[in-house]
Amino acid sequence: MRTKGGGAPEARSPWDEIVPSLWMGGHYYRDAAGLRAPVVVGSEFDLVISLYTREGHGPDGGVEHRCVEVPDGPLTADQIESICALAESAATAVGAGRRVLVRCHSGYNRSGLVAAQALINLGYGTDDAIFLIRYRRSKWALNNPLFVDYLNTGLHVARLLVGLEA
Image 1 (cartoon, helix red, strand yellow):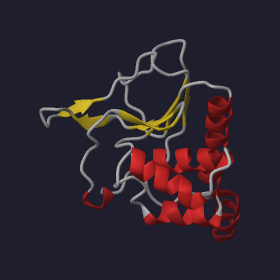
Image 2: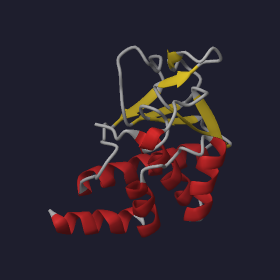
Image 3: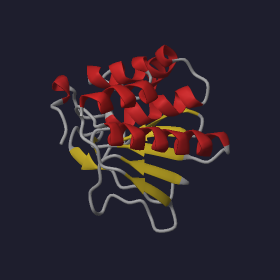
Image 4: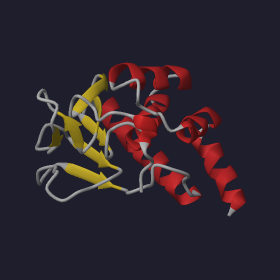
């Protein structure tokens, strides 16, 4: 499940580097001719984290691939816990100099949530993490205000609060 993205256009590139070794992308983008094109990952990255998956979009065998499909909407406490674990994996890999791609359908919200938390884990402030993602990927990145709220609250606190509602 994904939101409509608030009218967000598809990305103009398959993926973008947010900080050295941390990339963010989607499964579809608009190519130079303006046509919708699939993004197929080969062996460009050492770790691929997918929040949305489709057969035939890679990565190649031998590339570490972690998949957790989550909605582009309200998350459960368990889903937030999974996001935290993926972000920690991304931060650890980036810290070790490994090339990491975090991706979802369009490469804006779910991937933005994981990438932002990875940046926070690497020592960036929340505002700086959100700014970098929007500046380097797209002004449309993290257009889901709920995800920004999760980041501003702190994902670990958000997980606890969401868990209270259950």
